[in-house]
Image 1 (cartoon, rainbow, N blue to C red):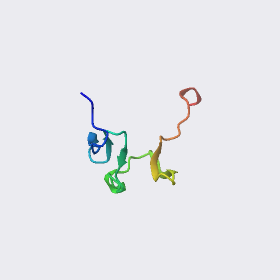
Image 2: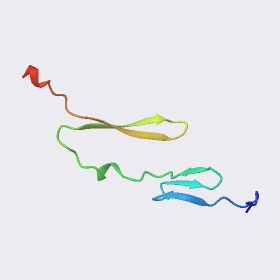
Image 3: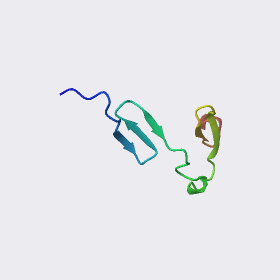
Image 4: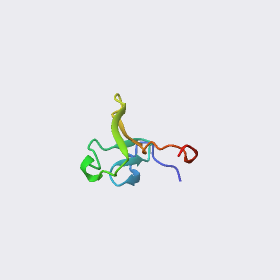
Length: 75
């Protein structure tokens, strides 16, 4: 069965409304932050920082770093 080339694209995959994949290959991303910063409680010893990965495409990420520890052989 051939698909009509003028059919409007429809949602093929929906990831909690944050990311949607349309039938024509278009990817739609939400503009609002999904999880606010305050939703993540501080964990002792874990450091994190929110950074802009690609400003042109409004891509951001959160970097985590575990505590710095000495190797067991140095203790």
